[in-house]
Image (cartoon, rainbow, N blue to C red; front, side, top):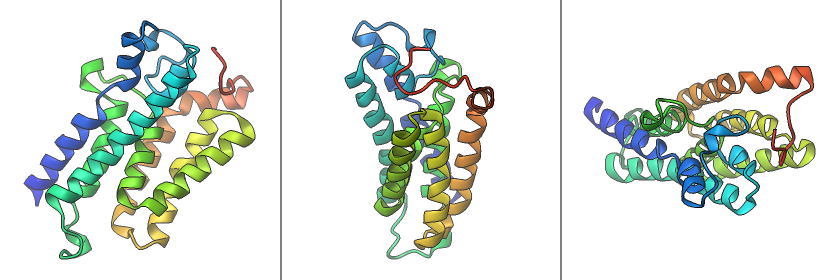
Length: 205
């Protein structure tokens, strides 16, 4: 079980660490996305290049790598219909590692994104209702306030509650760790929110 969890974590990290935002902006001649805005490689910062379709593609790919990490872990290391929940260790390991890989990619000297979209993919990978709850919260808060950081921080708490309510309690600890990590990575955003200087979606600041 330890070796399978380690393999799942390595696989999850490898997938999560693919810096789609940076790759896409470089390939399309938009430059290094890390040199603008927040310096993040996520979709919100990619949007600051002025390309909505590039930001949308980054969002989808960052979400997809989180989903794929969990799905592959299910397929390769777990058979939930034949296993007790206590033996599902490789799947939560892959989920956590995918988000860590996105936030701290070795290829970029451990400076990546903030994990919101990748965590959405992880949530869909665990169970689609959890992912749906995540997406609805994210979109609703974003639509109301148009502040990406607030939407992201609100959304990461939802999978913890949804997993507990929907019978995926074995994932609650790792989802709590992910939520704490994502909130910690938003500490600069929290400071700007308090100061009233946090930019709204679409801003180039």
